[in-house]
Amino acid sequence: MDRTTLTGSLLVAAPMLREDSFRRSVVFVVDDTADGTLGVILNRPSDTAVGAVVTEWGGRASEPAVVFSGGPVGTGSGLALGAAAPDGRPEGWSPLEGLGPRSGLESVGMVDLGRAPDTAEASLTALRVFDGYAGWSSGQLAGEIEEGAWFVVSATAADVFTAAPERLWSRVLRRQGGTLALLSTYPDDPELN
Image (cartoon, rainbow, N blue to C red; front, side):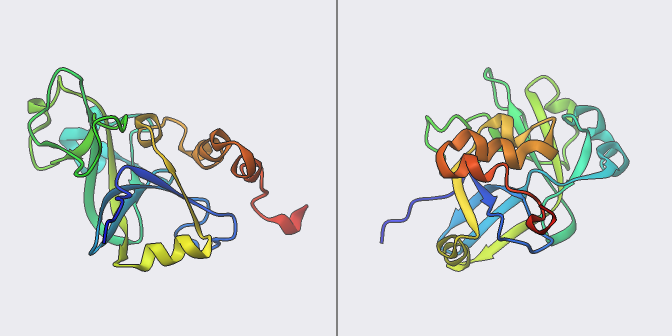
């Protein structure tokens, strides 16, 4: 069976998805295989500075320079995404598997936080650190998408490293046009209207 990968896509929570972990979330899919899917929530910044958790990387973190809640799975473990400069691949940076050469996300990859940042200093143009991740077992995410819980849309590097995560959900929906653009104005609590 042929399978199209969701790696490099955004999962945008539909307004009907009210579960606290994912309400109005925008998830960047980092890995999607027949065994399951792993992603990180891009619009859940915490109050914890990156430098308070991973001291050496604090000065390299993109604004807002805080640790983001990547999802409800594996909390207490860090995961980092970085954008590599066009002229090279920094040590400790690895591209996401399965992205096409024209995805627009060639610069986005995983960063090994166990390495000293000085080896990547000149070659990383952005860095985002996440506590935990979002994960789905084989077939689970496909079922949720079919039920209408998630909209699958294209991602940009600017989405991954946005300086305004609180506006990401609306902004991503708005740029889709049509019905999804209309949903970008959906009230957080429709009963208050």
